[in-house]
Amino acid sequence: MSSYYLAIIGTRDNPIYELEFASFKNTTILSSPSTPNTPPPIPGKARFAPNVKELLPFIANSSLDLIEDAQFTSNQLNLGKIDTFYGISINAFITPGNIKFVLCYDGNVKEENSIRSFFNEINELYVKTLLNPFYAVNDAIISPEFDLKVKQLARKYL
Amino acid sequence: MSEDIILPSATSLSKLTIHDTSKTGFGYNPAIGPISNSITSETSSILINKRTITLSSAPSIYERNITNKKPVEINLSSLSFLFCEIVNWTHGQSRGIHDLEMKLNKLGYSIGQRYLELIKLRDGIKLNKRDLKIIDILHFIHGSFWKSIFGKHANELEKSQDVPNEYMIIENMPLLAKFINIPKDYADLNCGAFVAGIIEGALDSAGFYVNVTAHSVPMDGFPLRTVFLMKFDQSCLIRESIH
Amino acid sequence: MLYSILILNKAGGLIYQNEVNPGLNKLSTNDYLVLAGSLHGIHAIGAQLAPNIGDKTVPASVEEFNRNQNSSIMSTFKAQSPNTNRSGLQNIETSLFNLYIFQTVTGLKFMLITAPNPAEHKGELNKQYDMAHELFRQLYMLYSDFVMKDPFYSLDMPIKNPLFDTKVRELVN
Image (cartoon, each protein chain N blue to C red):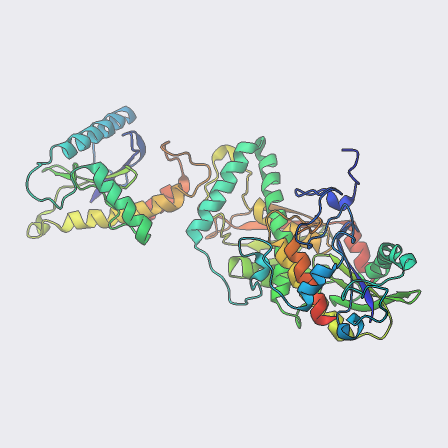
């Protein structure tokens, strides 16, 4: 049961999309109320500790240095796990057009394959966004449909 | 607006402020950050129960399949008419030949940025690699990139003998210029500036900073032969020498 | 034997003139303009001279014919026939020269001036007429490609396009 922070970073190191979420798996067990006083946790809602939550954008940003180091040494799009920081693991992906996807998550045992599939599908969604003539590279992605699709992918893969 | 939080990502056409909240519960707002689209109990139940919700009236691009490998062909006439209007419109907007070429280049640039991502995606996951060397990316541009735009490979790819950062892609029969007659007082103009912009956009976004210009170099039998001259930024050469 | 090709805009102004083969008396540019204007006028009057009795399937006016043509193009994406010259002056045959006129949907006119019907065609009067119309079709295609798709050409202005010239010369030779 882990939480995730996804950031899509533009070519000028600017965030163009962010999302915090948690794994939707095993939700049936957790959604049963454990104690009558506390409301049941919302499935899929990120459960980062407050002090970690405010650090997430910084962690994602600091990983950009490592991503740029790898950018011209590896010809892969998916760079895999590139860093850990106080128990937060960081996976990264670079599109051919130099847009970076950064995924930070707590817990360290992760299905690399499912993250790779997740990234690949996000890439396809990103390309579809690019085909919109009203969207220019490095604009924030504010489309609700993009958001919905990303969340559906999160539910499917993570 | 003093309440605007200035974020580099918020400088787009569809600018949002901290007062804009999503009605559907979906959609990222760069002025607020990840709280804007965090998962709530409503959105969570939509996702868990795989409910379908309609966010827009028209079918969106996100529902379409864009990885179809079958080449999509369009009519050369309609393309020529469209390009004719592009040149005509740009011509009316610009002061002089250089300005016109700059504007055409700029129009092509954003196509190049988008097309690079699209065609790499269409190549499929197995072949989907980033090109790290100038020569690799140039082979890609000259080969499959050209083929998917113009239906054929470019004719030649050459490296300048004298200047280390100059490369040339040569096209004997530029498709877009086929019906264009350059008037005498525009002798230096080459409408290939648009295609040069496409190349520049693709190379730039792949991390190869470059300046591309189009030049007419007619040969016997190929009156429209065009040379796309690419001048790479020194930083690319330095990077090549390190890695 | 083809002597000369003329293209008139919809107002009757001469926008293109090419003497592909020598053989005609030299006319000054001004005379060509006058010739074009006169033929345009004769064509328009000719369209009015049609009898109003008889075949009801023939469209009554040029406007109605054009309307039919346009709706056919819109629904089938194909012109029934590119030549809309049904009710005006179509050709003049004299013992010194022949003149053929072809009009497009937009009112553009192509004209050919040729030598008179040669003696060996005496039996088949339509032969030269058919050849002229095949040539019109090709010319119309060249015009659509190399004139209409040129961003530096403005509609109804004289055609000064070496590329078009070359293509026309290739066509007639």
